[in-house]
Amino acid sequence: MEKYLINPNHKIAVISKDIYGHFSEHLGRNIYEGIYVGEDSDIPNKNGMRTDVISALKEMGVPVLRWPGGCFADEYHWMDGIGSKENRKKIINTHWGGVVENNSFGTHEFFELCDQLGCDAYINGNVGSGSVREMSEWVEYMEFDGTSPMAELRKKNGREKPWTIKYFGVGNENWGCGGNMEPEFYGNEFNKYNTFVRDYAGRGHIYRIASGPNKTDYNWTEGVMKVSHRHMNGLALHYYTVPGGWGDHGFATEFDDDKYLETIIDAYGIDDCINHHLSVMDKYDREHKVDLVIDEWGTWYNVEPGTNPGFLYQQNTIRDAMVAGLTLNIFNKHADRISMANIAQMVNVLQSVILTDGEKMIKTPTYHVFKMFKPHQNANLLSSYITTDFISRGGDKIPSLIESASEKDGVITSTIANVSLTESKEIKCQVADTDVKDVKAEIITGKKEDHNTFEDPENVITQEFTEFTKSSDGFTAKLPPLSVVSFAIK
Ligand code: AHR
Image (cartoon, rainbow, N blue to C red):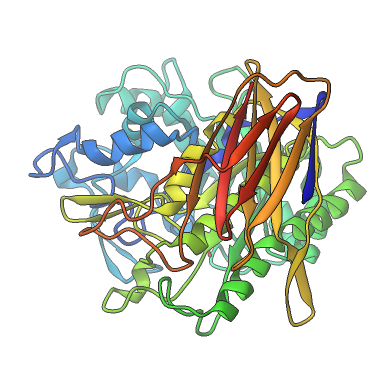
């Protein structure tokens, strides 16, 4: 029997709701078809946004959305995406499949999407192929509430009032697709571009994000922090779980036990990676003024057979639910230093929460995990600890049980992933100094390759979990292998 202790007397930090953020790039069928179908589509829509997808996303909760990229951001010229749609420039999406991008989804459409989702906006600017002036004018277009050339242009295009940018990213992966720069060089570019991301709204509210490292590239963090830490609010880490590395990563639905272990161990590596980047950041920022943002994370497999390799379309199984469950628990535990995270990507790309096929739509196992974890948004992270055995592969080992606990409005939410392939785990939970009156629980579980299809959309869903016994100070429970369970404790 494993021991699980939750201490509601020790509140560590508020878990920013933005840790549950998403990312939508102009990539494959994410924006076009997945979200935006245009006003004239037969697929039911409101102002071009498909109503089925919006309603599912609202139910799950999207606090913040990053747009327009990714690699696409560093070749996006925002002026191509405003004004009458017939006249918008058609360009080649060189990064993603070489397809025509007709720019019918631009700045106005993005804010309409945020409005419909009820989420905040994270805009990613173009450093790689854009100018300082272009970036500055985009911010003026979006935020200035007075008389100026860009504010007049916005009004001419039908939007009187400015919008609010919560987060602004100055470039993306500038060590790679964003310009192949050296860290110190990018640091100087960041400082220059960021200077002209003016506070047009006069509220000093724009949170500035520097393009950060790829996974364990601590040298990038070192160089950028050295040159730019005084000018940024957050540094953006990208962490993809890529079983097999950048060769053959296997398919989303066909994989053996060894591939499962490889995936889950790689995913768990994000914890060490976060700690290591934070320790490098601390050398330059002892007062912790700069947060870590993880604005791209998730699994990356071979694309589904027969689909465009540049569209990064993959299915999503119980394995992905395990990755989501363990990763979100790790993010919660780092709530004092992580201000935002964005899973890649929201619809039809990589570890999506929604998949579409024409007018059909399904929710993935990852969707259900995000929904189960919703009560953690803006809750107080509590001190908690669970004993656990380990699972291993070669020389690597990780815990079987990965948990976090938080409190909001008198309810304690505890989420536990049992990532073991075969072993159920019995746990005894004790909540310190608490007279526990009621416990309710939900579970997502199945075989490792179980997933939803357009023919069988509810093969994997969350269900009420009853394999526990309440006690006066907690509960005992038996968690099946390959499960994520969420407890609501009152
Ligand atoms: O999410 C897909 C791509 O992965 C993004 O465009 C890029 O930033 C990263 O390499």
